[in-house]
Image (cartoon, rainbow, N blue to C red; front, side, top):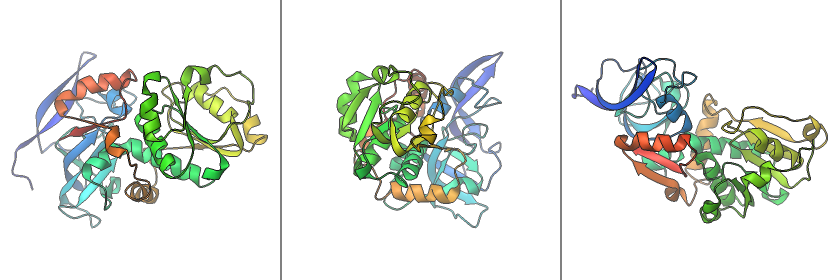
Amino acid sequence: MKTESTFKAFRVEEHEGTFNTAIKDMPFKPLETGDLLIKVHYSSINYKDALSASGNKGVTRQYPHTPGVDAVGTVVTSKSDLFKADEKVIVTSYDLGMNTDGGFAEYIKVPAAWAVKLPENLSMKEAMILGTAGLTAGMSVLRLTQLVKPKDGTIIVSGATGGVGALSVSILSKLGYDVAAITGKETETNYLTHMGAKSIIKRSDFEALDNKPLLKPQFAGGIDTVGGVILENIIKTTNHMGVVTSCGNVASPKLNLTVFPFILRGVTLVGIDSQNYPMHFREEVWNKLASDWKPSTLSETCNEITLNELDKNMALILKGQLKGRTVVAL
């Protein structure tokens, strides 16, 4: 057990409806109950973290609270036969950083069922460059590639400069797929091309497509990270027997569709639930991300910060201005 009496954490506190953040020295005693006490080496910034830090009660019900839905580190103490002290583990999603104090702290305590052993050939920093975004991208690629092969045609990816989008582009490109990337950031064309995109589609152009039940088929499949009109038009432009995955709703949670893409073209829409994804699939995806699927541009998608820089960067992600992945070094 640790000899220190306190550890540092990024805390969000509520005072009469106003939410404030500060780095606090926290005692070990109030750490959540759980099987594993983990010394955190890295975390990363996700959209949910920014929502939690700004007081979104749909993400975090009670404050004070420590956000951070991602963490990687070493086991200090274990009550589980699955893990032993000094093992390196990844913890993402479930309730971490939502209503359980999360990875923006030097230590966390979690159930063993939330942890995955860090795969060989993946460093702790690389694991957090991937994080929930990489796991979500990996889940999306796994489901899509089960039915759609590179020879079938181009895959379209929305929100392509975001964490899930950029990693999806990179993984698909490495697997031999031609990728078309949708973005609202025209200045990032070179970045997306470097990630592996063969073509770039302006978000405004794609949103402005005719509002018909079906559109000209152009894509073998798609990975959508934003929802709304973009997802509608991806589905409408998908080829016969194509597959589209859906993992986000930052544009809108609503879809205005007919059943025609599904019953006339046999399009499959696959939902991606990264929060409660079954553990055996998580382990499969993490092992693929550490080997055959590991993006060659992984380090180039990363900006490393400290706890002191969290506020500024979470403000950027809420505005849609954070490019790639931002890793928090503890």
